[in-house]
Image (spheres, rainbow, N blue to C red):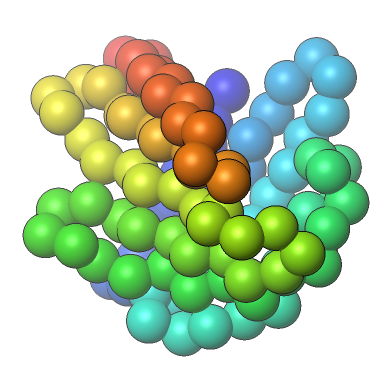
Length: 96
């Protein structure tokens, strides 16, 4: 389950699952230190920006070419995660 609360360019996001939970809050255009505790336990510098109607994240740390993109299409949330040239595309459906 993904929970996303948007207030202008400020986002509160939660990813909830049986195995682990993760929360990250950010403001678009403001770089911040992110600790991916509960995921893969990395410390990275993260910058999220807008590219049209997509949120684009670039993470700088021990692995190159790492980040994600998120966008809405109707009631679907698309998430593309990139790591070292590999791509994972996930689609979430909005609960009514």
